[in-house]
Image (cartoon, rainbow, N blue to C red; front, side, top):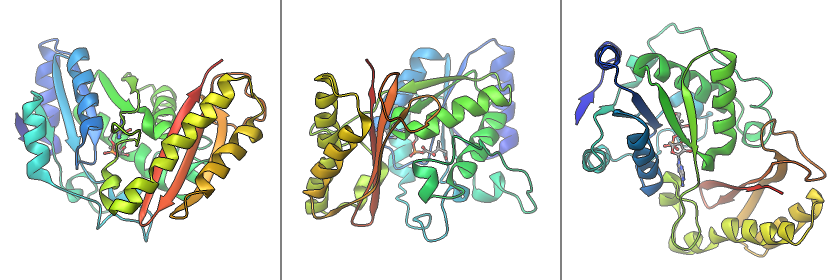
Length: 281
Ligand code: PAJ
């Protein structure tokens, strides 16, 4: 596995592979890898002749006061995990390489960035859309894999690729969970043991909600109420939002009469955790 740190070397490598007609599959990450990331890497391996993974903790998607400085990092471990997955290139640029001084251009996916996580993290999705655009321009992938855990992020990237005619195929990967149901996340490392237990209320309330939906409940506020009451039983958990939205537009739904997503964000200790479930009739 090669480690590449500069834009010119990365682009040079990808251009050479493209000249050989090789399909490049790409998995962007912020590192501190877990099995969820590795499942995306395996999906990339199935779709591409070459696999590129980036590790870049992107400062522009963290608001002031968020956990950019304290975001977990372990490059040596990530390196070993990716080498074991037969990744071809680990792209690991410095912040100054991606954001040299004087930048003025940003990518805003306007409407999709407003609700859900966008409401409490202003500027977050602008940072994500900008860095993903830059990474696509550097890595030149044919296909890129993103997790459905970050459901809003995935929809924003699909929209961005359409709107800017990018010609990268975007593939969504189902949420990878711990055996007890907790969605895997680099931020789970923030959880103390009793908080880790409390965090089960996210996936468990989503499962209860799905059962209610399967039994025929299609009135969104009734399902949201159930989720809120389940999470309220957990004193360590503070709800940021619980919403049911159209899975494509992310418009909030009252009646679940099309493909929908039940999405939530909950704070437990210093961790802000998200999870979701698609509801299809
Ligand atoms: P990060 O949180 O490191 O996640 C990288 C990719 O892994 C994202 O596509 C995310 O949805 C996916 N992922 C994380 N946990 C997952 C899980 N439990 N199951 C399935 N997929 C999972 O998301 C980002 O980084 C950044 O915003 C990034 C896109 C790299 C831009 O900076």
